[in-house]
Length: 140
Image (cartoon, rainbow, N blue to C red; front, side, top):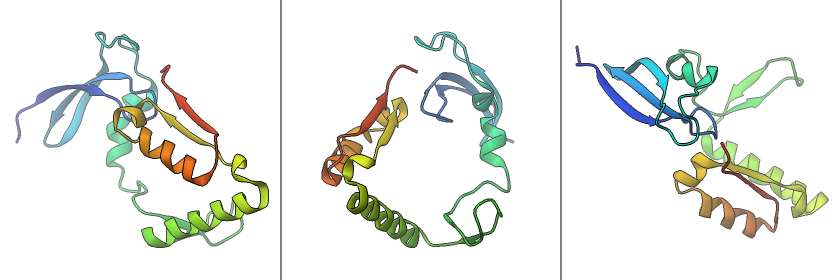
């Protein structure tokens, strides 16, 4: 059994990036609390953040793309490849752009996107798509 260790980090359960302190043992989070020294969240951690290990380790957690095969709300899905999923998204974005213009598409990015370095990539993607509609939320 691995020794318990404390890790100060941020919660990546959503775009908020709240300060979190994790106690980890055997690659599993055994305790989590809000980081009182975090400059914005000052110890607050929502229910989703407090449940991050339960969410992460669920055996039925979605880890691959699914395509709806039944009527919306029917709950029928089929597993598809990542390549097929990306292709279908590209086709749908192209259809929306052709039918309604690129302004009909918006991309939302949060603090975690900025911290992870995705911010410039998202900006370039939206620029190449031709849409000026980009949201960046840094207030969480």
